Amino acid sequence: MAKRNTYTGIMTTAIHAGEMPDPATNASAPPIHMSSTFVTDEPSGFSAHDLTDDSPYTYARWANPTVDMLEHKIAALEGAQACLCTASGMGAASAILFTFLSSGDHLVISDVSYAGVAELVRTTLPRMGVKVTPVDMSDLDAVAQAIRPGTKLVYTETPVNPIGRLTDLAAVSRLAHDAGALVSCDATFASPIGMDCIQLGVDLVMHSTTKYIGGHGDAVGGAVAGRADLIAQMRIEAGIHHGNVLSPFNAWLIARGAATLPLRMRAHQEGASAVATWLEAQPSVTRVIYPGLPSHPQYELAQRQMNNTSGMISFQVGSAETGLSIAQDMIDRLNIIHYAVSLGHHRSLIFWMGSEGMIDTSFQLNDRQAASYRDWAGDGIFRLSVGLEDASDLIADLERVL
Ligand code: PLP
Image (cartoon, rainbow, N blue to C red; front, side, top):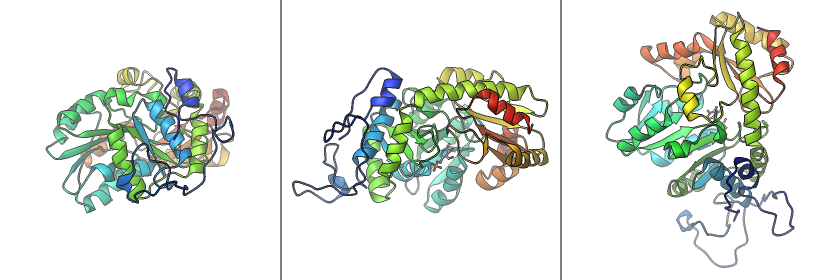
């Protein structure tokens, strides 16, 4: 099994947690164990329920040493007891939803969340008898009103994709726990460096490790960290029974990225602060949303809750027509920034998201919720993931299209 050392420093943790020199060869870098099965030296049970923390490796859908190494690293970065790695970020979200919700249960979820999750909870969950209440998680009175007997899970995401709105995790966790519900947080935008979700009261913190944790745009993956008993439940349901497991090769790539996460997050924050400040001064830019800017409507919460404001900027340029025309210009004329979905990579990425489509299709917002979405996003926003390039080069690239 992977080493369970914990370290005081976050950089040491990112590099060493979960790893040890390979006992077979003394190799300093962790090996990739691609084996799907493991030779056993005594007869054992075949049920997922026979699995314990001390079980030897048996079959890679149950556990694999390379995936185990990454799970220990992410648990250590989150200050959590345990972690489950999943096939993707959507795999992490569905692992939480399908492990902790049953027919008749009630889910409270942010009315704006990653579009894939928003669509899953509005289509699949109701089909399975789960009742869903989407709510603006920045409005604590609305959250309190939405929670009711039968609420089993409060699913948050902060900063929320794509508008950068924040949730007060300590306050929402108190409300949920008073009602006996679990709280999860999709912290993909912030990464484990951006917030101490577990300390703030969150039970399950999830990431698309495709983004900041992997950091290089070459491996899709997901992770959920939290209490050992909750993660053990998820390992049986989501991993062993649903087959929602991470490939060892991707685990290795993601762990190599995770080793430099604290350093990269510092650089993402520095670059994004410079670019966001420049964007705010451009006459063609009508609004910039970045939690590190005093103009963010929840700047005080950002200062209190976030240790690093990350590299994600949203900005508006006026009407949807203007946005679309600038998006086309970006596709044709940007040299450095890639016009592409995804985020958290060393390469900067930008993508236009028109509000009408998001409101009607992904979020299916009522009139009041749609008005609030437009308060943040106007007719549409550019989601800019500031990478690790020099801010001066990124600004020069944006200058040619804005
Ligand atoms: N959560 C957030 C906040 C995301 O931005 C994404 C993807 O963009 C996901 C979850 C889903 O992650 P994946 O694409 O790895 O399935």
